[in-house]
Length: 212
Image (cartoon, rainbow, N blue to C red; front, side, top):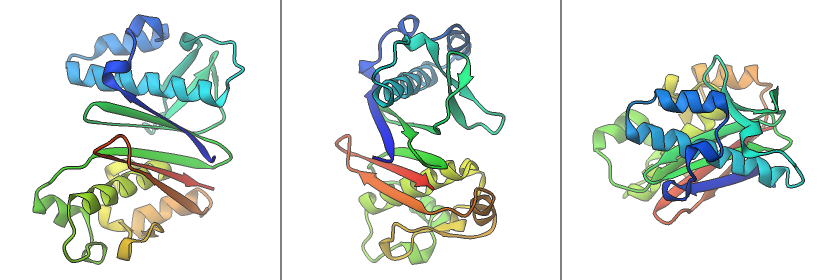
């Protein structure tokens, strides 16, 4: 397995004081919107759960494994105050949060999306015509969006890039990159992408992208 994937329902997350470090607890207390608090908390628990799946012999507590954020906005793990070597990515949608930790890869990205109908203007802004087959429905659009966002996270540039600069033509799982997305890929060594799609939880699409 190139990655450890952890998917957590919001209702399965323990109380914040049971697993947050002091720094994380202070960040958590700063959020005003309850929706944001729940999403943030769930993603942190998912990340810690993934760490202990990757390191089953660890004797540390949940509070000794911390999710921090780089100046670029990318999350990473601190283990007893030291940066953990494996890359981390987080996502959330609907009632779920997901975390993925890479193994033997240069970078990683994850996205989870609820399958639902969206406005046509959203599709027109997000997808090149070559990516849209005749009769495409919510399943296709949701998977395509998840692949693009996961690739952008693996590249470390998020949704700051033009979505037309990442294309999955003809249903391919191999992205074609242009402009800023291509430059970001080159800056990371022009490695090979591996894309995995999971139809879970039910009614959702989860995409994991690794970059070697």
